[in-house]
Length: 573
Image (cartoon, rainbow, N blue to C red; front, side, top):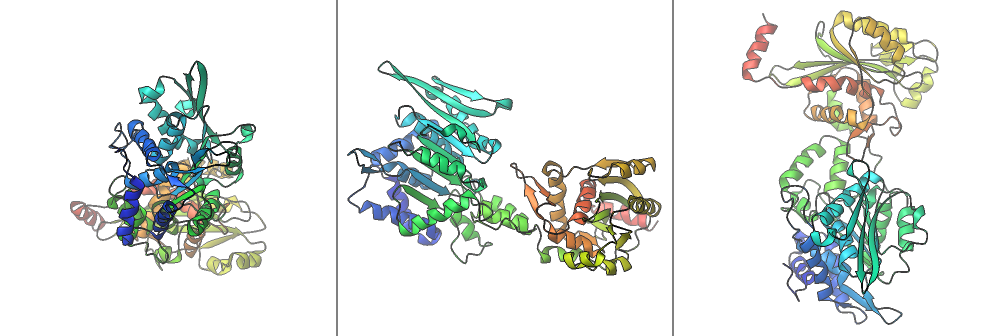
C-alpha cells in the first residue's frame, strides 16, 4: 500500500547511506545525486506525483509467471527509488509550464531482478495513468522474439485488469505473439486513442511520429544505434516524454548497451544531464567474483526473485568454462565482458589429454564425423562411454584427423600445429593433393568397425552425403546432427560438465587444440552451438566429438554399489 505523503525515494536513500558497505558505489552515487538535487532551487520533487505512479503499478500490474503468478505487484524499495526519480522531479520549462524533469532513465540490474515489473509498469502508466492524450508508446528490442519478452507481460496485465481491458483492443499475431494494443476513450465527447506498438529493427515507420514513451528492453543485445537514435529524436516535440532503457550488462564493446552505459556512467559521475536518471547495480572495482557479498550487493532483489541458492547453481556452471564465467559475470553480476572470449581456457581442458587410453579393442563406441574439403580439418571421433573402478561414468575419446598434404608447411605455421609430427605419432592421416580423400576416411571407419563395437555414426550433414551412403551400405546406422543451437546445446552443456568433473580423456592433442579454439553463438533462448565462423582457428575435432556426444551423453550414468559388483563380475568372469 502506497501511503500518501511518504517519500519512498528518501526512505531508500537513507537506507543506502546508513549501510554503505552493502551497496555498490554506483548506487551510492545515484543516491548522492538525488540528495544533491533536493538542495537545488531550480527543480523540485513532487512526492504526490511520484506516489501516484507507484500506486498505479501496485494497483494494476500483476505477476504472470512463477510462484506469485496472479498476485498484484508489490514494489521493492529500490524499484520505488527508480520510479520516484523518473516521475517525481519537476521544473519550469521555457514556456513557463511545470513539467517532468527526467526524460530518459537508464536502469541496469542483473537477470531475474524484476526488470519486467519496471518495464511493464512504466509503459502502462504512460498509456493509462498519466492522462496524456494520444500517447504513442513503443517497446523496442533487437528482434521480434526479444521484444515479446516485454510485450507479453504488458498485454497480460491489460487482459487481467477489467478497468484497462474494457476499452482496449490487443493485437496478436502468429502463435499469439503481441504486436500492440489500442486504448480508445473519450473526454467531453472527443475520442482519443493511446497505443503501444512492438518494434524490432525497422524504424522506417517512425517518420512523422512523436512517441510519448519508449521502452528499450535489453539494450545490451542491440548492435545498431539507429533504432535508439531514431526513437530518441522522434520524442523531441513532446513536453515530457519518457525513454526507459532497462537492461542487464552484455558482451562486447560495440553494442548499443555499452555505449549508452558509458554515457550513463559519465552522467552519474559528473551530474551534467538533468534529463537522464541513472541507476546501475554493478560490482565495485577490484571485486572478487566468488564473494557472496558481491552477489548480494549487485542483485537488489536478493531474497525476493533471486536467491543465493540460484546464484550458487549458476556459479558452479560458471567455473566450468570461460563462456559460462562470462555469462555469470554479465547476467548475474551485471558486468560488461568481452564477447570474443573462447569457450574454454587452457587450465580447464588441458587435463583431458593423457598418454594412454588403454586397450579399447572390442569396446562399445559411437562415431562422430565432421567432414571438410580443403582448409578445415576432417575428423572422425570415436567416443567410448565407460566406467572407472569406482563405477563413475567416464568417456574415452580417440580421434583421427585427415588433412591434405599440399602446402603442409604453411598450414603448420598458420595454425601453429606440428601436423607432420602428429602424423608420425598416428593422430593425423595425410591426403594427397589439395582435397580430403573421402575413401581414406571410409577406410578408417571400416578399421574402426573391425576393431571396436561401433553402435552408430553421427555426422554433420555438410558435404557428407556420398560418404554416408557408403557407410550405410556397410550396415552402420547413420544419424544426421545439424549444427544448430537447438541441437548442439545439450551435448555442449554436457561436454562442459564432464570436462569440469574430469570424466573426459583423450590421447590426441588435437582435440585439446580444437577445444581451446571454440567460440560459441547463443540464440535468443540462450541455447548454444560452436561457431566455425566466429572461431579464429580450427574447431572441427571438438565438433566431431560433440556430434558423437549427442548420443554418448545419454550413456554416462554412474553405477551404484550393487552395480559395481555386477560390473566386476562381468569383467573378470
